[in-house]
Amino acid sequence: MGVTSIRLQPEVEKPLEILSKKLDRSKNYLINQAIKEFLDRRAIEEERWRETLKALDSVKSGAVVEEADVVDWLKSWGSENEQSPPKL
Image 1 (cartoon, helix red, strand yellow):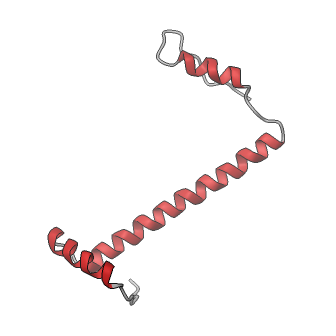
Image 2: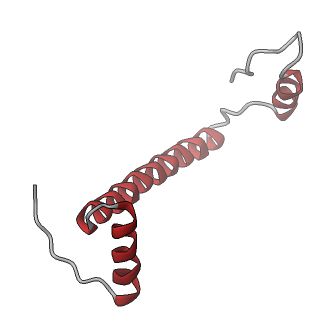
C-alpha cells in the first residue's frame, strides 16, 4: 500500500474530522473511500464517452434504427403484445 501526503484546506479538514468521529472511522478510511468513489465515477464517465463516440460513428455510417420503430416498441412495453427491440 502506498503512502501519499495531502494538505487539506480548512473547509475540508473540519467537516472531515466531524464526519470521522460521527462514523467512528478514520480520516484515512474516509479519504480512501472518497477517492475510490471518484475514480469509479470517472471510469463510468469515460465508458459513456467511448459509447457516445461509437454511437456517433454508427450514425455517420447510416447504422440507425428508424424513429417509428422505436416508438412502436416503446408503446408496446407492458402490453400483452410487447415487441422485441428493433434491430438495425
